[in-house]
Amino acid sequence: MNGFDDSPGFFGFIEDMPLFFKLFGGFVFAIVAGGFLYAMVRGLRIWMGNNASEVLTRAVTVVDKRTEVWGGSGDSSANTNYYVTFEMDEQSRIELPVRADRYGLMVVGDQGELTYQGTRFKEFNRRAKQSNI
Image 1 (cartoon, rainbow, N blue to C red):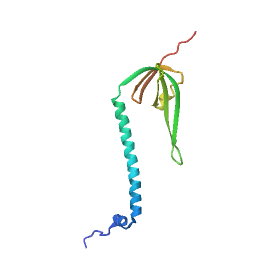
Image 2: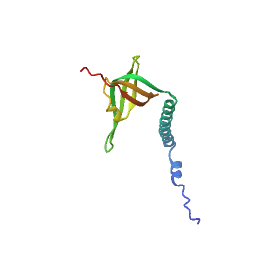
Image 3: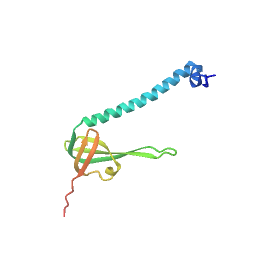
Image 4: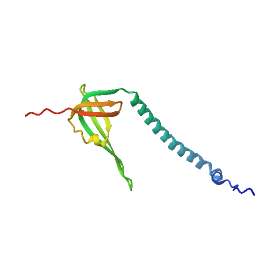
């Protein structure tokens, strides 16, 4: 007696499993692993694309704001993503994700200087409105 258990264990269970279940399990595993891999590669491409983009500063007007709420079922809490749409002087628009604290400081109609890099919001400096006193 060598002190080790010679039973096949988990791999013996896999060997005894019908072929259909082996194929189906492998397919599900491949889909899940592929989804994770796709998400990682996509995130890395966006990050690298933003880093390769030049930092731009443009005169803009805030034309829209929106939120996207996700999650929050059962015992989990909800998450919120914040987006602001800016219109540039040449009438082109760009929607950028912003942090919650920046989102609350912007109002539709605000004008100012937007600094961004690719799809990455950097800063918005509001231009002071002229008073008619």
